[in-house]
Length: 83
Image (cartoon, rainbow, N blue to C red; front, side):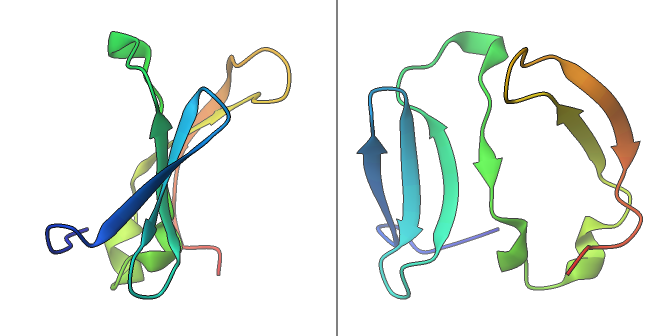
């Protein structure tokens, strides 16, 4: 994913996450931690904004329990985009 410098607007929601959205259309592009914790950082990317969905084929998906434990449920491969 590429964008011009300054195209992303970041805002904090609470004290732990930044959300980034496009200044032009307002779509949320990603989320990331406000303060880095090193190798355990997690980020989220809005994959629906990828120009060519075929680029997502066979990426490794890390499914985890984000509600309680934040532990891995399973790993799998994305065979086909789900939209």
